[in-house]
Image (cartoon, rainbow, N blue to C red; front, top):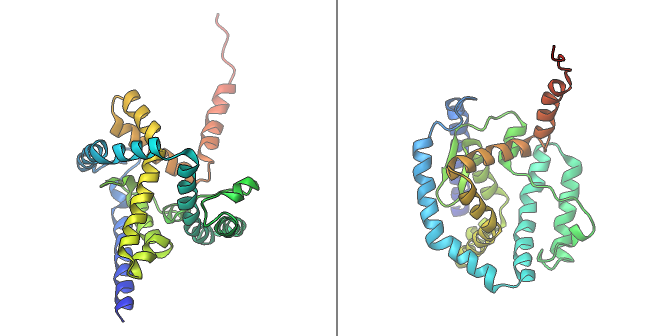
Length: 256
C-alpha cells in the first residue's frame, strides 16, 4: 500500500512537470530562449561557487589518485546503467533496431563485462546510443521551453527537466536502491556518479572558463545546440551545411 502511494505521488509529480513544460513552452521564443536569464545566472553563480569549493577539488583528487583503468571502469559502470534508459526511449521513439542493439550492449556488458565495469560491447564494435525522455519528447514535437539552470545539475530546459524526472523515476537503477530502502547505498552511488561526471568535465570546464568572456552564455548556447543535434540524431549540422551550400556555390559577378 505504501509503495503504491509512493508510485502515485511520483507519477503525479511527473504529470505536473509535463503540464508545466507544455504550458510554459510559449515563454521561450526563437528570439529569446532564455526568458529566465536573471534567475538562471544566479543559480549558475551558486553552482560555480559550489563547484570551485567542493566538486572540482573532489574530482581533481579522484583523477590524481585513481589509476586510469579504475576511473574508466567506474565510467563504464554508470554508462552501462544508463543503457536501460536508452532502451526504453529507443522504444518510445520507435527505433526498434537501436533498442535491440542497446539491450544487447547492456546484457553483454552486465555479464561478460563484470557488471559493466568493462565495456566489452565497444570492443566488439557494437554501436553505443544515448537516448533520454527529453530527446523522446523532442522527437514527438515538444519544444525545449525556457532554458533552465538546475542547482548542482547545471544546464537544462523545461522539456529536459521533465524528461530527467521521468527517466529517474522509471528506468534509473540507482533510484530503485532508494525505493527498496537502501538509502546509504543510493547516496553512495549518487555521489560516485556525480564525481564520475565531474571528472569527465574537468578539462572542458577549465577551457570554457578561460576561453569565454561570458561562460554562462557559452554553456547555455553549447547545451542548446548539443540537445538540438541529439534530438535530430546529429542531422542539424548537415541541414545547416545544406542551407549554406547553395549560396557558396552561387557564382559571383566579375569585377568590371
